[in-house]
Image 1 (cartoon, chains in turn orange, purple):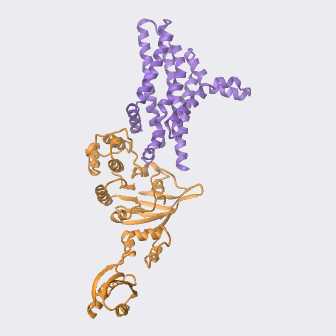
Image 2 (tube, one colour):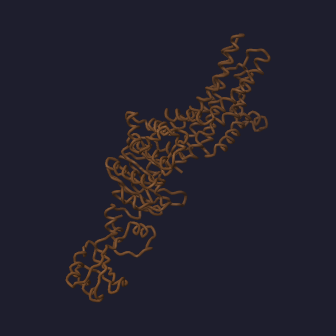
Image 3 (cartoon, rainbow over the protein chains, first blue to last red):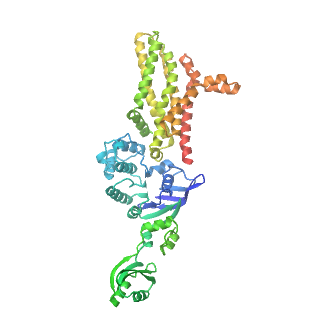
Length: 325
Length: 234
């Protein structure tokens, strides 16, 4: 379990991280999302004891990282932004060294074999790290973090430099590890965070811009209450009929897509499903419903909105999010 | 500490540093052995040990330049500092690795002594005092080199600054002669590395000298630990 309370880091006048608080439970995967330079790595460096915090507290399994660093660090497997690899060693030699460095008690041979199989580096075990590709280096970095089977994993952009197939493999692995580890994962790729994490913290300029479960964030930015429908029929009548749906907030016609076919934007109050009502009205009047989709906002939109202030005009979701912080 | 020590000793040999250091060190001991023992035909090796002081000033920076600067450059430092080990273990692990290589280098003069002993009488007591002095001198110098290496991420800068620092320690006596303020002069006299070392090569064994070199080594290693401590808190 990780508990972070009011963590702050100043470099002179610059506030790299400002008053961040959150908790990660066992068996949970937390995603750190933010543009480059937002303070993701700084936060992770504070959690792992690489740098100290200016104020605030970070507890790893209840142990303060600054008060008992050795004990706290022994709970953490850390993959920094640049994997700390000794280029002149073989993969096996390096992992053996890490095993000794972490004063690991597990049976050496079996454990190393397991970690190497998990991260799929066993086929390069005897090779010098210097000669490996970026993807393999990244995986050796991940293997290094897994040695000793620490209960907390902190992974800084773990899929950087991997090809799409490897990214998928690593994501699956992280998800699997997330079941019995506490995982913090950072990324600036939304789909990745969305695919892997249970909860998301969006960081911008050293502040927590949003903090919610992935489901909630996704719900906020979706779906059922905002519909774009393409309907064939008399425009004004359709709008009039649609405006009678219970709970609807507005309906307007967009451009004419085909002769006599308009695209209508419909929005109801949040948590109101108007899809069936739309169908019923169309059926009743013999208007043809040619296409319908929810006006779904991707996390991308939310992310941009949150990190760039009011750059994009969005309806509701954001009011709720403000409350969730 | 064991893991860091073993890795570091291994790294000395996978990089060429160990071979270069040993080769040059042994070349100089060989030369001085020939010039001060074989050529004049004596079993007194003190002259050779006296000459090795300056050679250490040149060579020990090569031994220590890589220790921390390379970690910083390759970003492996982050792995060390987030591992469940204390700063003391990190610093002393590396320090003892360098000291081990230095001790290996000292084995060669010992072989010379064995060779001499087959031809004549060797004054073993004095010889061991000389060995101890050279070993402790190296121990203090390696600590200084390690500290400098922790301050930069450039190996060459580390080597040059270490060399200048060791040279300054070597020159303390010279500086002392030009200082007219009496208490400064006295203080420099106490700090002199060369006078203490040369006294032993002349056969004046003094426990305070041993304590001095060991204290310097421990103090400077402590400063190295503080460097890391300070960097973390800055």
